[in-house]
Length: 219
Image 1 (cartoon, rainbow, N blue to C red):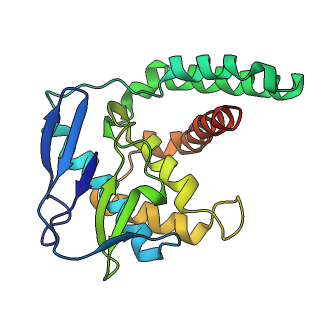
Image 2: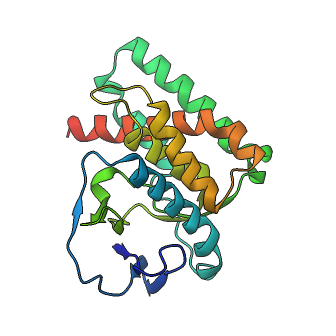
């Protein structure tokens, strides 16, 4: 699946083609080369934040008749954790089960229903985003894990955990994170509930890719 932005209207150029197993996001020919940027600039990080805001702002109305369960929902979390049991020490398994319980209880509580939900990409790592020669956003690809009703703050956390790391490190870079959040809020301001859930969303996103990467490693 691929999403391309119309160069004259990056915040509203959503063109959808419905498919049986999902949605294909298409647009006009850009007329220039697009490529992956392994080390995006602060402006590009801000741009992807704005793109996430645009998805929340525009896609919700466009996708009213589209429904797709999250392929990496709680059933997947629990099943994958169970499969990984033979590869984990008792301490690691205990920590994993504690985190799974904490996350599941938090994100399935009644209070979380107040957090904005809608269509998300859910796998927007740097290698799934292409930029044009002038540095502007050109395409978002690989929509295989997209879902129709997932907290927007979770999708934002997935991006933060990849795009906003310190160079050659595993801590969040405050400058990069500020750029991402500024971009998102320029289009779709964070609600108080989203701000409250942000630390848990970062952990939830980390847990998801910890499980998937560890499973891939052992298989």
